[in-house]
Image 1 (cartoon, rainbow, N blue to C red):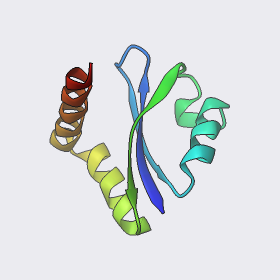
Image 2: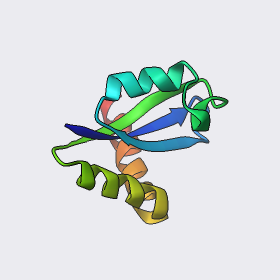
Image 3: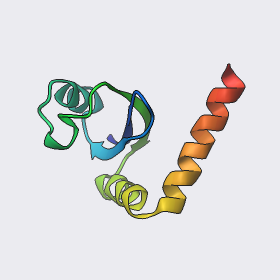
Image 4: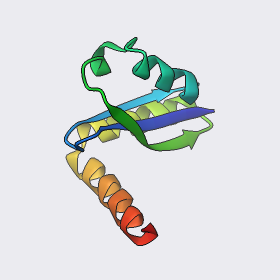
Amino acid sequence: MWYVYVLESEDKKWHYYGYTSNLKLRFMEHLNGEVTATRYHKPFKLRYYEAYDDESLARQREATLKRSRSATKAMMQRLNNSATKGA
């Protein structure tokens, strides 16, 4: 199983998009400062993830989120709407 995930800073101004085959291990690497891109952006949380059977699909989705502002905006809007409805 492959995962596309989004990390979000506490103030919600910063997001990191990644993919991995081991979500728990990768998140721990982020928390422990082992990932250069997130080392100085603490605190953050795992905001969202998607699961894929195929690595290439996960890699494509991650690339889409990084490259396409409209895809990222649509995903974040859905997340924000679901959080509001759940409260």
